[in-house]
Image: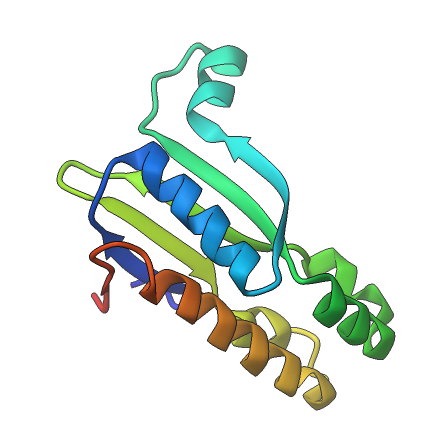
Length: 136
């Protein structure tokens, strides 16, 4: 497991999982500020084939505002990315671990924000259809 992500295997079709992730993010107060279709981008820009892979840039405006009020340059670490990707036998969904991401600031006042965002992102992934944590 990547030491900087919260990672799950999910049951379902890729596009349905992307929609479910977006719905669950909204339930937790996150908007999706950007949606990058990596497969389409690599095909268009490089002519390369790649698996289905989407990067969703998620942001909870209230929490982001509070955290940036504490640490003005925090915007360089936002939004919190959630990736949905296809493998040979399942769909993977991973989210940045905010505790790891915010540790680079060395500002303990951000710890409560990291914990809150991490709990919310974990909840989003746990509620996806057939979600199983990946610990390897």
